Length: 472
Image (cartoon, rainbow, N blue to C red):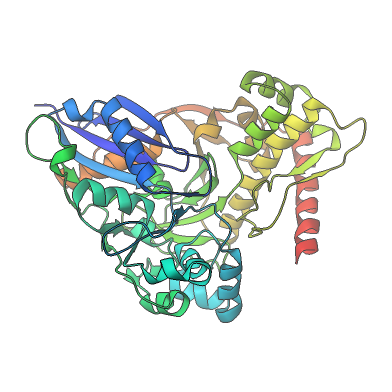
């Protein structure tokens, strides 16, 4: 008898539900429901989006689902009262209002102390900084907090009735250390003034429970619900990422991450020492600005995707001397939450539609290249780069990334790798073993030796250093 598993990707922009054949890994159905724009949201919106995508993917009509798991946007803050009602809109990873609290944490303890304590330096993204913001700015709401969880935990709770999380997402809170798998409640006491109830941390393969009746299909035993994962850890699992491979994911954010058996500590605090979704570690760098830099520039130019690609690939390869810093929404790598974008080298000759489009694409590529260089600096093995995410479909970005990185870039077959990682975890929880699903590489993009791309990289680095010095 055939069996299926369901993987859920609850991202910043949408909720995706995929139904996957347990044996082959073939995607049988997929549905998407949008999330509202913004950096804070009522978490009930995520639940409604899941219900919509769940229904449209045909899950309730199936009687063969044996496992379900949720991957979600990392960090964030879902704080609820004793009745389980949110005390405040969930603050998302890209909400930078807690930047002052994060900066104070660094100044009070220093980066080295934080890296030893939780293997990540405080930034506005992490849950602890957001709780500190809530305490200082919404004290009445903070006083009502009974439980704190992450976005994927909220959905797992409503699917299974169990208050649980996993190592990968817990490792991004700022009050959990992935090496010894322990919460640091003293940090909550120091910066939130209380220690709310926290979800039980499950191993990657450990079931959370079973699907509650209102979610079940047409018959059979209720499906096992997996522990879930943070979105980047789930993408790594969906790719079956191996040591020596680095994934670059280009979506709302840009992420650059690897899979390591041993924890990696970046004494500068730039690299987050997350856990992965297999029991290992996931050193990761994140940029707030990625695909939206290109879509925003395209909208400014009044261009659709095809026209934007044409513009970005038809002008001078170095963008005619025009250099963009893509910090449209602040930035996390480098940690400049109050930064704004910069456009340098403006002349009547350089300010063309072609140069502006290419400068936007090259700016995204260079931001990702900076992250890869940081991984190399902390001795992460970089033998192969895998490019995924919605932005990976951009022909313009594909055309410049190999020369920017000075590496061949492998592009796996286009797929929802976060949702597939959740599905793989669901299969693992349901059967006790990881499924042997194939990974297909569609193309290998080799560097061409384009000197213009190299010239842009030199200008980009100089502009970034000048701007960082100006803000310091």
